[in-house]
Length: 310
Image (cartoon, rainbow, N blue to C red):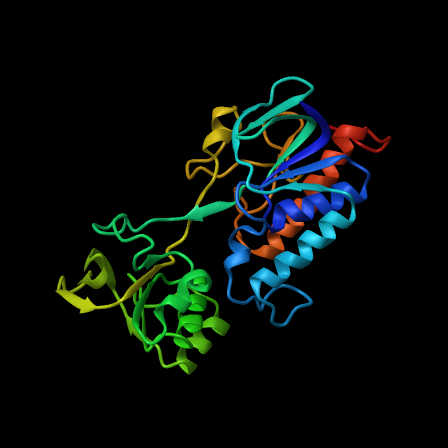
């Protein structure tokens, strides 16, 4: 078992930022990421609302964050999934599918995962026409017909990105207006994307791969079937907190970790930052800000400087 000052669980913008601040302050720090660093940011086609970058791709921003984090001696373990936590006592134990680690403090920055439609055919056709990442899978639909499901920034961004690849793009939303930011809505209008308002997915059909989608208008109750080659689901996220709650960390009714203004959880020495917390705004900028607070508080908890008060 290797001992650390701080273990950060999650390698998205929050986790990497926490790593930067922790490493820079002199804490021996480990970042554990079950996939590749970046989280949802790594699959964003572009980002236009992160200060200092008028336009940058998600992968490029993540690469810069990773390099910055490693500059301060932080170890990033990719493809290492956390299995369980023991957060009681002075030392915290983190068991993964590869090793067991211990630390004096832990920051949870596990983010969220894509919410599912839970419509018939969704599971069957995942990877065969059903996708949750336009940047990852868009190239497979060059010259084809696709539908993006959702009404927020991610849905709008995905539809705009796909409009440069697919022959036909429709954006389906269960309401009569989008909740996306005005800049994204304006981009949608420029790309001549067709909107399907007040509609919900009832079933995804196909033979081997997706061939069609069954929709229902939730006002008129009309049901119709459209021929499509791809369905991109962008309907929100669910927090990654299952193993966290099993360790005794308190969450709200939606599953998000409850933190105070210092990003402390209910367990001493355990902090949380980013989309996994009960903060009201889920953005890269807020994740970064929360991570700065969490890392600073973790430093105080571990090193006990004269000014630190629990």
